[in-house]
Image (cartoon, rainbow, N blue to C red):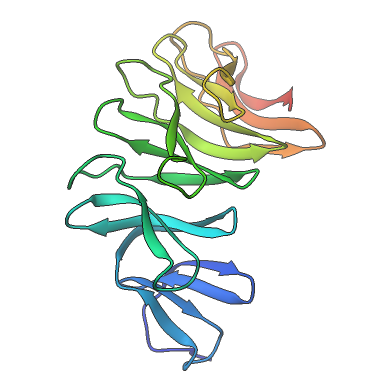
Length: 215
């Protein structure tokens, strides 16, 4: 049956409540009366849960499209950090949670598209590492495996390959250069099972095949 006459996008369940986007952030307990707007902030993209908070890209004229969080209340729906200062957009996206920390991709207007993390506070929202200095590493396929984040990225020297991060700059490293040199193996999709990371990748000698590395 219809819960409410409303166009809903990016559905996310949190506890016993459904959160979704429709010209703002909404929540529903499955009844028409209990389907209400949480915040009028304009929301782009998708919703993601991390560390007991709901995260999304929210837009305001003064800050542009930036990282927001919500505890499910209007008062608790707030801007986390204006990553690209002023009305510029940082485009936070490709969210993944590892150990209660939100990992995502963003652009701060200086370093290009790089890997970021947030604990839900302004000071705790930082770039993890500038993987491609002077370029854009374009991290994608962010996937939690065990206590680490695995993803695909470029560093300007090795093409698009598999990377791993423990949330520190020093601990954000290339896992394997499968297509040697500047060629790209284009790893993905990525998943973990039994202490192993499985992913699809392409090399000149094998074509596109299934690969694995210890997590």
